[in-house]
Image (cartoon, rainbow, N blue to C red; front, side):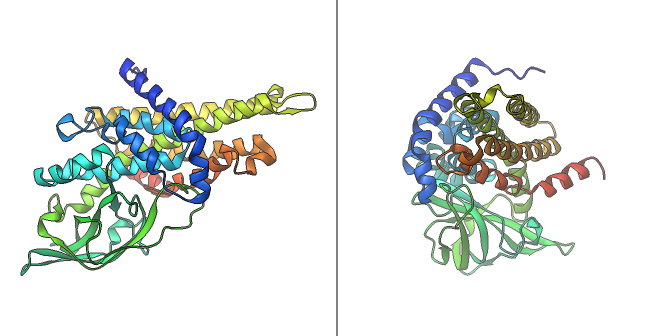
Length: 384
């Protein structure tokens, strides 16, 4: 098994790394502190083709694959996670469901804008009262046969890219009936932004990811055409699970990027900061901390490489995606804590990137499936 990157992959990684260092790094802290969305950076990522990386050229994509997207996410997150999660959610949660499950008409309507970065899409699964129990969805959609429209009522929570000026749609999971066994029939429905009855609440006040867009959404007799059903009726939950399985590999890549960014910043600081007459990087206590951080980032990277390889080969990958996401998010929190400790009092100051990394790391153990859910997935796949 060879995890060395091709020349094309190396070139992409280098171009994204340059963009992250030269464009994102100088100004992202200001967006972070002001809780503003970095529209100009998003536009530049669109021009670079990042939003279309894993999609075929016939849909306006770059003809790459999901692993290529993960490489880009890792490099962005080495500098900032807000911009990385904006890309991850736009691709994995916004565009990918339409690409995988949409009709030719839906793909033609939405994909060109989403893959160019001109527009963003959201993924409406989580609800205020359900959290990890996605099967307990309360949002309902009733088909009004007299008008051939879905009438949607309910709410969604913690939805990324849902309230920007360029948000075009939200794909909503809703109960559309009852299955023969008495369980809920859950379907996915596309709701365009601006649809009457669809309300975007004010942005959350978050601990981290402050330059990322996140809102609660409500649907009050929100009507959309019956043709907005995404995929087969009653298959919405299965579609969302597939989307989440893939998304966990992307989140693992993002977490690795944050963990590696902590190593980068700690090495830089350890060389510059002097204590007791010499750089703190000369002390074994600091050297061992950074060595452990590098070890963790490296092994987590191998885990998401492996999961992505299995997915692209068409092999079962659910367990491996869960392992990658669980391990990478855990070591991201570990590395952020250690990087803050290495920086001492300066690590608690927002002017240093590690303070942002520390605040951003915890959500990685929660979003797109908590660490507890990942352990459930792994155990069940082992037959337990």
